[in-house]
Amino acid sequence: MPKIGVLFSRLRVEEKWIFEAFESRGIDYERIDDRKLVLDSHGLKKWSQFDCILERSISYYSGLYALKVLNGWGIKTVNTALTAEICGDKLATSCTLDKAGIPQPRYACAFTPESALEAIDALGYPVVIKPVVGSWGRLLAKLNDRDAAEALLEHKSVLGSALHSVFYIQEYIQKPGRDIRAIVVDNKVVTAIYRKSQHWITNTARGGEGEICPITPDLESLCLNASAAAGGGILAIDVFEDMQRGLMINEINHTMEFHTLQPTTGVNIADLIVDYVLKVAKL
Image (tube, rainbow, N blue to C red; front, side):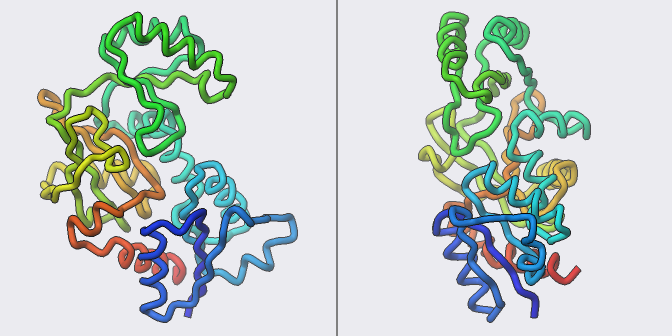
């Protein structure tokens, strides 16, 4: 019987479902609170007891660097540090999609307000500016004109954080009041929902409502290609529907929430996560 570790930050509904899935099967697992985590240079022996670690940290950086250490020691993890590094950084995701030839909205990055304004002018208003690291639709801004752009860029430039000095700019896609979130587990698109909202931000964390989305051949192919480019594993693929260009990838998430998706679709994501973790543990 494999032994599994689950690295988590807070007991959200998703973690409760995952823990219940482990317990219902009698799987030997251990809960590891990343707020109490210490990874030291003599820790390999302690961590080698685990056949696989499932990473569910809320903090991108806590999860990423824990994965880097564990993978460096040869410990199997879901997902890998490489996948986390790509998916947790929007610019890294965009570059990875570009390299793989996968359709996505046009984007630009700049490092000063002046160059960011030039990039925005080149893309054309409106645009969306995002933090390169972040989730739940926080700190996204839609800029409709140069006055708004100048004001926002000035605010960001004085916030002091190095990440606020990386300006990630994306063309605004006129969505049909929704986007798509598809779940890929072990190179299979297992389910998908529309996230519908009157607001241009359709994240369920911001009030978007879920509705079952059919998995068409085009959606399946796009999501599988995006998953493969990001390193595979357990991923949530966020997809835009553009009226002229068709489906395109917006973002890829490696520690996704599924509190809306699981009850909406009836697909037990927690069980599928456990299935995949056990498969990796036995490899």
